[in-house]
Image (cartoon, rainbow, N blue to C red; front, side, top):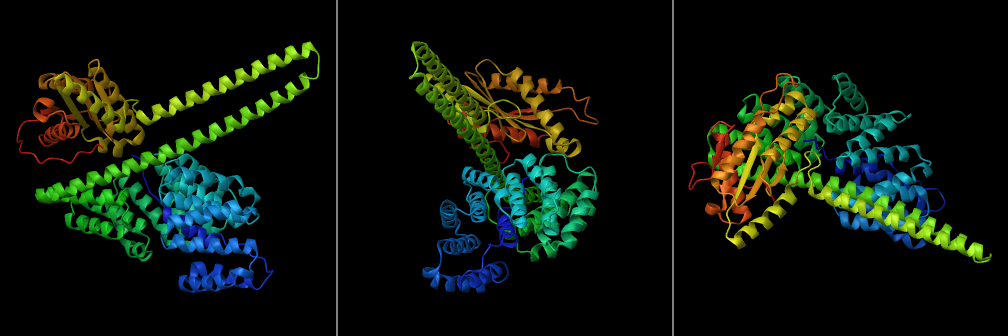
Length: 590
């Protein structure tokens, strides 16, 4: 899974520190505007007082000054968490303003606010609108901020190649030390997100030094988190723990929840890996208490997972079960969030393509109409030419209609198919499975569900990288597809977990399918991967005869059997039986 480090509030920080309003000295309001602009990032209380004074003078302000005042209020609303109101007002300023710097600033605020409120398509649309007029903004600092904001938001949307592009473009320019600090941090984040981190630690250390010199503790400590990840990948876990612990007080002094949650989450994970249960639990609780309350936060997922594993090691099964349920819910929410952002990006690209196609089609139609007007003035020969042009127009329209339809079909497939393994994704699998179970229930037929979860898959990712992990997932999907019967449903539920639903199958048939999958996995050739173990999985089988035709119930019992297979040593097939002595795991599919 790609590293997911969201920086929503960080954009507001950048917008506040790097993009001052351009205020010309033309009236008595202008000095107060400049004062409010200065106070906005240094003294929030004084800034609020200045806004009140500006409100009293607003009747005598020019239209442009009024829009500047409104944009200052948008910053106040953003800082106070009134995101919906802030987005609405920023949109109004964008639509009303004719000056590029003000439109640019308003568009960036809309993009940032929409990222916070998860209106991803809106955020992308206005980010691209801001970038389209970036060259019309004279202020070099404002242009720098446009590139920084693009890098931050594209990283948020999982488009790390674009995030890397904008970060490197800024690094290639004569930017300020602070901008270079943020750009270096975002470039490292993008490289980790792409699964191609720097080849050695020198680049990360140089970026940290740049940010320390620029007095940017948030960026420098985000980079230290990546340095710790790099060290852990090289087996230097103790060194990584020492680094993060040494700067923990500085991290918590920033008051930035995402950074606090992330660093404590990493410490919890690394402490657990060296057997320090108390230290791991302490950092996990600190991540939960101080790391923000986003349901899709990676530190939240990490903290619950660490607490679950620590409770298991202590033998506290009740606590372990409760923490595992919370971990599963948080992990599902995070995966849904990642999917929503990726889909929003693809949708925005689709909308842009459709818009460009429509403009091109209208231009072609206009050209054809002009030709028809000229043809109408000529002889019969010209009339025949006009008919030919009309047919050409219809052909072009049909061609573009066909192309648009093909694009729509492509996006429908993207919404149903897992892009890596090219089998059904979680949502599509469940939709199909519920329909097939309903048909089986109506006809009185039995159905069986087989769940499988790859054994020690995280070890493959950690040792050999995400590219190798992706290769393994593709091989597993191909192998299990060969074991499916005609009419069986096969899908990837997320991560390394897969499911097969077989209509008309009893428990023996489900066991045969699982055993065939197990044998197919054993045949996967991993000789090209140095020191790679054989690929195995734990299987759980359940049928409607014992569990009924309700999908949730069937999935829960198959999951329970799979969990038993894990507990009994992995690489085996277990079936659901009444009252097994294994705790029930909360379902991970919705």
